[in-house]
Length: 181
Image (tube, rainbow, N blue to C red; front, top):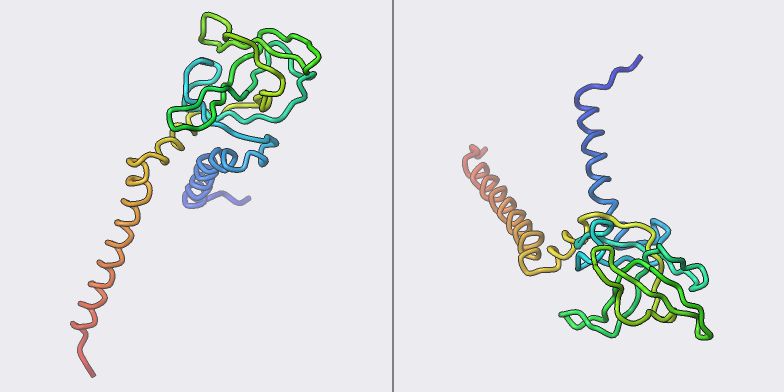
């Protein structure tokens, strides 16, 4: 019988950790890996505790006729975000109204006391949420900030350059101290 060594167990643990850290980000960038069409970072707590601010929601297109009360949908809104992007809201369907134009939906955030004003036309629905990945959106938002750029690009690049310079200096000194033949 083969007994794994501490080194093998440690390597397996590191591999599992790397996969656990990389896969959520890969799914966020390429939602098709998880069978979804799109992914969005949730920026408000209106769906807490089901979906928190900083989570990433993955969703797939669904015909309006398949959307039911209780489903969580993402839809376009006329409001824009602070950075000028088109607004997307992710809320729970609390009512479905049929109509000649494909119908509409009444929605409500789980953390909100009241239903959303107005109705969401079927044409505004982007898709039905399939699942959420906790916290990944917070990391993505940080990475997109100035501080995130410094922490995740500038500092590692500076450390890499410093490491190379130290290596070159050591090699140069070792070359000078070697006796010539």
